[in-house]
Length: 351
Image (cartoon, one colour):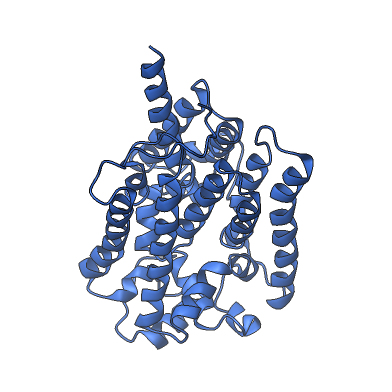
């Protein structure tokens, strides 16, 4: 039985309700993180991790008179909220974003929240959390369709540090992760049109998911037209939308995004505490072990290796906190777990 055989799925068929039970538990766990975070700080506005003095603070102060404020610079949830409250007036919204072009480039996450709750205030924050939970739902369904995975594999998603952070802080990573995993699940079943559609949605959520499209284009025994579509269509869409987004906001770039990447390991050695280094280092080791295992299908191995490459080249702007660095490898971590468990199962069978 080959690794990409669509007839082999996870081993949850013996559970009451089968895979649906595990998927439901994964969704409940995903819902728990934003609820617990908001309850701990006593305000739904805490899910934005907003900070006074930043470009978004006037918006937060206007919409939440009793907002829960955090030390500067806060986090990206406040920026996604600013886009979601008024996505169709980018030049007006741009003055509350830093940098505006990059925020609008990741349009799908805030746009979906706006579709759920057009307006502002608590309903919009809840909508951002709901979109993240949907991302976990999509990812959990995808993981349940990975061949020969253990029954509990979908639970690895809401328990992943990067996804927990994304769910708690109104970030786009949970949605982006779910879409990447869905693209791989579609590829396992040779549903390339669905894979292309999902990858387009992924790159409009977070541009680094383009790495997954390039890796998926290396799937074995696929014709060149399919390879070109899998890698090329998301690339063209991202390039086109990036140009449009830049024009819409007036290309008002700032230096806030500089330093995201650096020479290998230099971002790990300067200004990073031992506690903040421990989590991404441990998770990166898991990816390395998985990538080195035998009998791993090439697109999965390539994605693991590419993610390790991203991790070791993270700059101080990202790597100063595990909250940031753990999100970078969020899509790769459940794949690594799948590889480690699945290969072990096959090794035992072969023995």
